[in-house]
Image (cartoon, one colour):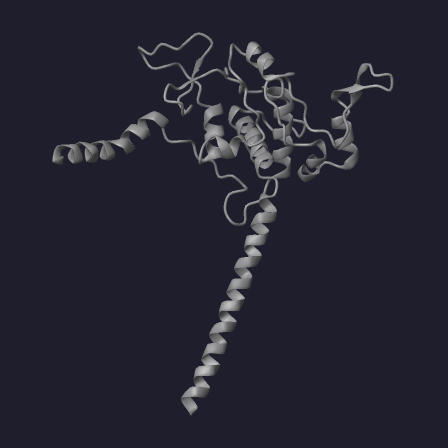
Length: 255
C-alpha cells in the first residue's frame, strides 16, 4: 500500500512537467488594449481585424454569432454596414417557390463558407475548420495570446519528427502532437490595410486576434464599466460606513 501511495505521489509530482511538455513553449505576450479593469478595444484595430477576417479567414472559417449590425460597435455607420452586408448573397425562396438569392441585410449573420459539415471536411482533408466567434474564449485559458502565438508559431519541425501528410508543425498548437491541419496563413503584406498601417506578420496577427476577441466578448467594455461603477460604489459605501461607525462609537464613549 505504501508503495502505491509513493508511486501516486511521484506521478502527481511529475504531472506539471508532463503537462508543460504537452502544451509547448510559453506563449507570446502582447499588451492588449482590452486587458485589465480599464481595458478598451481599439476601434481602428478592430476594423483592420475585420478586414483580415474577410480577406484571409472567411474562406474557411465561419463567424456564426456576429451579425452585420454588430459592426456598429467597431465604429461603422449604418450606411457602411449596409454596404458590407450587400456584398454577400443568401439563399431565399421567391413567391413562386423557386430557389433564388438575395443581397445581405444588416440583420444577417456572416455566412458560413460551407453548406454543411461534410462538405467542410471534404474540402479540408477531413479537418473541420472551427467557427471563430468564440475561439479566444474556448481554445485556451489565455485565449488572445494563444491565438496570436498560434498564428506566428509555424516553423520547421524538430529533427527526427515526422509531420503527417496535410499537416503543419506549429510549436504552440496545444494538441500534444503540435501538428495542425491549417497551413500558415499570416505572411507580410498578406493584406493591404485601408488605413495605411504596415501589414507585418505581427500586426496582422494582433489585429485579427483583437477582432476575434471582440467577437467573443462584445460586451467587454460595458462589463468593465459596470465593474468600475460597482467598485466605486463599494468604496464610497465603505467610507460612509466607517464614518458612521466612528460617530456612533464617539457617542457611546461620551456616555
